[in-house]
Length: 396
Image 1 (cartoon, rainbow, N blue to C red):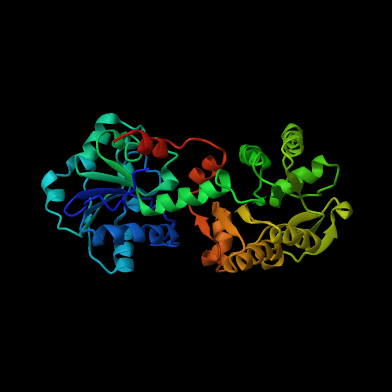
Image 2 (cartoon, rainbow, N blue to C red; image 1 turned 45 degrees about the horizontal axis):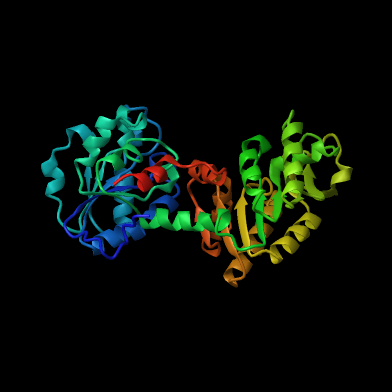
């Protein structure tokens, strides 16, 4: 791995093209969540200290190659500037309209942010000529955007063919954390996985089941598993025609000696807006909706985590948006965070709803690593090779 932190690398006066992911949620023109912005700050501060000329490349949304006013990076540039207490020059031109003199005149330790890279149609088709045009703006390229490294785009993949390319601090931290749950594992290791559909997570489960000691299935996925094992799930969220997927998971668990755990009791209600009742899984009525795991299941999960050295969590235990159905998710968070804080466990969490739950209960700093990468995080767990990572390893 070629790291931007390499002590032998002289960055003074070098134009560094820094690819980051600033695709943050916006509401009425205002940024509603800033964790992705915060994650890039260590790399930016490092480059400032090294007296580099920083040129930020990023995107927001899916403008499909068109200039969309509501998808400009300008408000994000202002937010980042306030967070690091440093002026950022915003360049609103499309890549092919930027003069070399504009970037050459950037002073050492200064920052310029370019407009949404996806305003260019050639970005998402990984056009080689466009990738070369981007590379001409800098001396060095740094990928610090793990969350877009599953995309074969010009500013992620193609650019590395034309310019010396390096891993940023944040992407290095992310990869090192994921290695500890996929290859450099300290056992016993446990996966807690939730979400609405087991069909969307089957590749993750089957890839990790070979290496993990425990897989705990919660959320809507657990309902599908319960139905397959002959239990009634009432009006709960549940997938049909998943018998073969369930058989595959159970067969692999035996083959690789991985214990599968799913709820023995649940919290049910007649609607998401109502109150809940704790029930044994054998006592579910046809009008019940399963919205959380029950107290006995929470106790079982706690016992497993207490005996675990490494844990990966992806997917909440229930409908945590309603306080009446948040106990399972909150308790899992509490169990993991306590053991992490006491240095008894290496903990990694990721996925949109999981990060939302962690933020809701103010536990972002109580995990060893929290990934905001979304699709790239999930594809890495499936065992796929990410184009952006492959490009960094293969090219100059």
